[in-house]
Image (cartoon, rainbow, N blue to C red):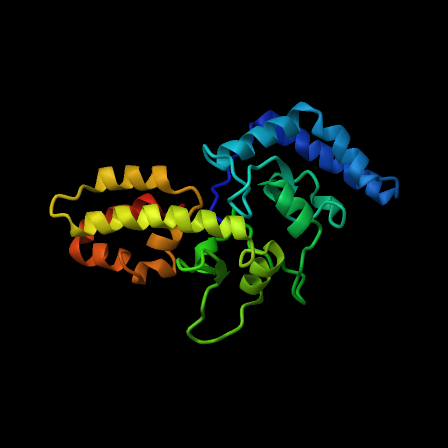
Length: 248
C-alpha cells in the first residue's frame, strides 16, 4: 500500500457526481433506492468514466490497486461500501481504484468501525500507510507497525487483517523481489564516493513497484541498513531522497 495523492475531478464531472448523490439521497428517503441498479446505470455515464480515468492516473503508470498495490486496478472501489453507506456512493473522496481480489476476496463490504463510528481501515488517499504499517524484508509481509509505547492501534491491525497483507504469497514475493532491487541500489550509493542524488532517485522510482520507498525513506525502514548507511555517509543525498519520496 502506498500513499496516494487525490487529484481533483474536472468541475463539470464533479458537479454531476454531486447531482447523482443528491438524486440517490432523495430516493433513499423515499425508500426507492436500488443501490446496485443506481450504480450500474451511472457507471456507464461520462462522470464516472472520467472518475475512473482519474483514479488510474492517481495510481501511477502501473495502475495498481490502491489497497494491495499488487494486482491491476480494474474498477472503482468504495472505501465506505456503497451498499451500507449509500450517502457516500457518488462522493469523489470515497472512490478508490481496486482490484478483483481486494474487492471480492478480502475487503468486499467489510468495513470495521470503532465505537465512534470512525473507520478502522487505512484510506491511502488520506492516511500515510507507512506511519501505520511495517514491512519485513525477510518474509515480504506487511504488518502493523510496532508502537514502542505498546499501545494497541486497531486501525493498523484491522487494515492488515481485512486486506490480508500478512498472508498473500504473491504479494509477499513481489515485495521481496522489489526490495532486493531497491536495497541493492541504495547500498551501492552508500558505498560510492561519487553517488549522485538525481540518478539514484530516478533509478529507485523505476524499481519501486509496490510503494516500498515510503517504508525506506519515511517509515520504519529508515533505521535499517542500507538506508541507515546512506543517511550517515551521504546526508545530502538522503535528504534529497526523503523529499523526493515524501508521497511514495
